[in-house]
Length: 403
Image 1: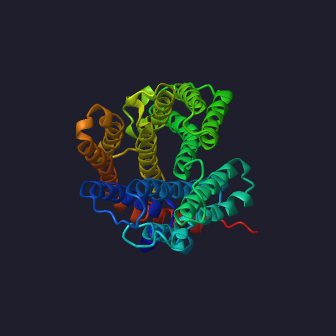
Image 2: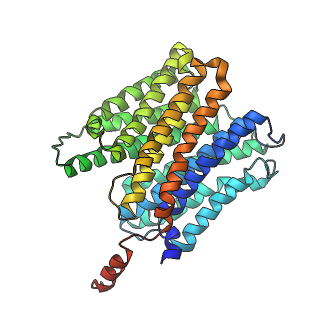
Image 3: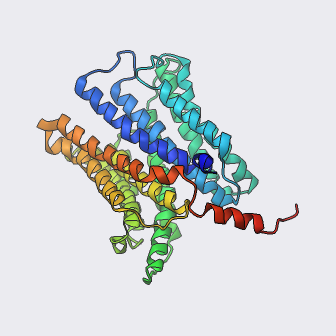
């Protein structure tokens, strides 16, 4: 069983791939920026960075999360073995063809990158449709839109289509933000309540469905207006509205009571970054304040990085049968990812004379968080569950249902 543990559940290979890519791709960008050593025929450095953070790092974490969550939602067996390994190989193939040193940026091989989300959606659609789990079919729509964004990016790069009036990468960023608004709105309050109750604390939480719907609708509106009227005053106004609604929603989740629970407060911090990013975007578009110019990195490095690290550390513990308490180095990794994102957002305008040094320091802090994750979680993710033998014996002893 041990040799097959890596491909027994979706979170195992994909969380490892995501952390490995976060540990490599950003330093590669910084080295290329510092040395000026970037192949002329490759994608521009900044475009490669944006694509690989989204369709490499973020895509892997989305795959790991959904491949783990869908079996829970549907009561189905997890995708494992060769199908799971095939998805991992497809993801790796996308990173290979997008490499600036592969010499493939002008060839149809780039379509391998755009094939990952359609393959993931097809695999997840089977259990969702079979179980009639209509509530979660929305995730298939988001995957389809992400696939479309990547295909559009690649088609423009190959010269098959003229550049659209909106940026496909910005569209993908907004889709991931919408995903966090939906998923984060479910898991952050639920995990908080569970943790407080387990600690023996009284927890009162009155649902406000109208606020939940309004906040997600506002974020969806941000996605739409950034296609139709990007960087407009309307986009700024909607960003302000979405920030206010998400903040009002998050303020009811008892986050301040989780400060002694790192595995919980990190999720609150990740969600809070979304609110900060949208507020900064509103200030930038409406008031053009220089200190708000880096709002996009508040969303990507801040919200995406923090939420992803928090989810990966929790899911990996819970689904390997371990206690939901993170080790001290992981708490340090939470601080590193938040500090790196904060420096990336405020540093360039606060210290303009040291722009390159600020970027290098911010990137080093952010990537170091995922290096720490790899060091702590690699043994966890490649080994069987500690209680695997007991689970197998229980399964063998359980009465089998006649079909």
